[in-house]
View 1 (tube, rainbow, N blue to C red):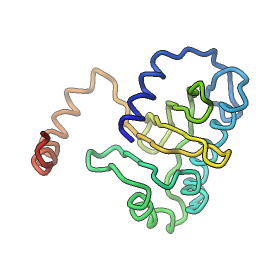
View 2: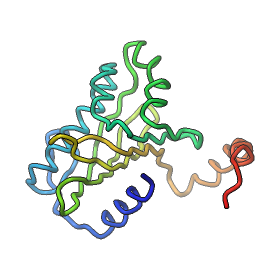
View 3: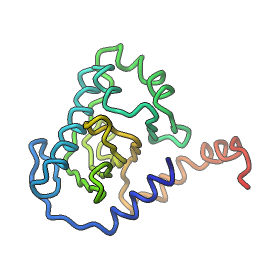
View 4: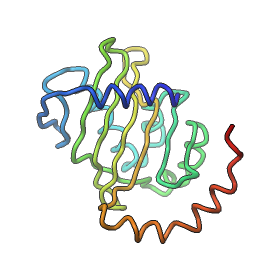
Length: 177
């Protein structure tokens, strides 16, 4: 899964495309129906969360999907993410993220792609990125990463805020070989 995501990132950095406005207000590459389908699916996915549509939201993720959240500990398989998310959906609104920019890229096979997006959220601007694959002719999210954005001038202050908690988290991890 990580290897697939890294490959996607490499392809994304090498791929150029002309941007145009999409129906969601985000950007996508010019006129390609597959990119338009991915854009619509991602917009629907975010809307399902805002509407607290648990089934609709998770039906747009593959069975082996991964969701990586903003906290260092948030690296969930689909089942764990469903368990974490269920109370938010049950309260009537999970979260509301609106894409204000989106770039979509396709592998030449047409069977998988990757994207990045800037999101307007309750946390202010965030960035989402991920990998999508075609399952039974429909696009689904296989891997999603949500990141908070931060002006470079503010990084030192953020480091001070998270230094202690990051140290505790790092100490809890098993050693890497």
